[in-house]
Length: 106
Image 1 (tube, rainbow, N blue to C red):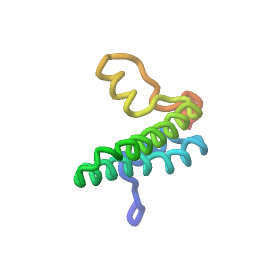
Image 2: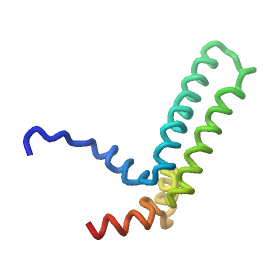
Image 3: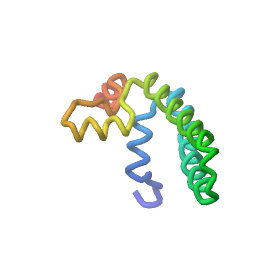
C-alpha cells in the first residue's frame, strides 16, 4: 500500500525473536552496554590504558548476562549461539515455541 512504513527485515526478525516483554526491555539495556564496552575498549586501547581492561570487560559481561537472561525467559537461543549451531549443523530455537505456534496460526 502506498504511504505505509515498512520495517527493515533485520528489525522484523529481531522483534519476532524478542516478543516477551522482559526479554525485549532487558535487551534494550543489554545491547547498549555491549556496544559501549566495545567503544570503551577501543578508546582505552588508543590511550594505551591496558590497566583499565576490567571496565569494558565488566560492561561486556553485564550486557551479555542481561541478554542471556532475556533469552532464558523468552525460551530461544541467543543469536551468536544460533550462528555457532548453524555452523555445526545442530538444531537451534530461533523463535520461542510459544510464539512460533501463534505465528503459524495467524
